[in-house]
Length: 103
Image 1 (cartoon, rainbow, N blue to C red):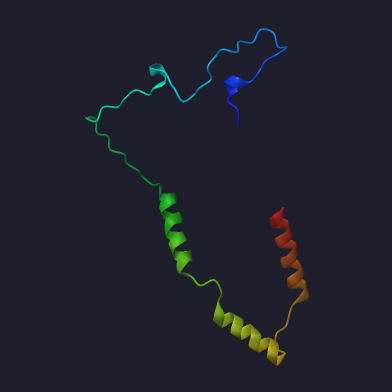
Image 2 (tube, rainbow, N blue to C red):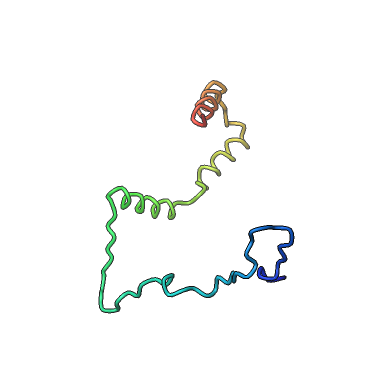
């Protein structure tokens, strides 16, 4: 790749081709002021009651199983026996409520 300083500017009036565009050399005025090593600052964090409750809930949910295996087994057995019944009205109402919650 060619350096930006070697680009020819023929036909463009008013351009200064002799400028140096090297951003790796910063002047002393661009440097951040040094921080004294003698100053000691202690940071503290405090959590709200809501944050503490959310953390406890997160830990509780992390310990809970994703699937209730006993319920799955009971439903499988009811389906196999032909005893599992679906109430169409209740199913329809649940579907409508779910769609309304989605917005």
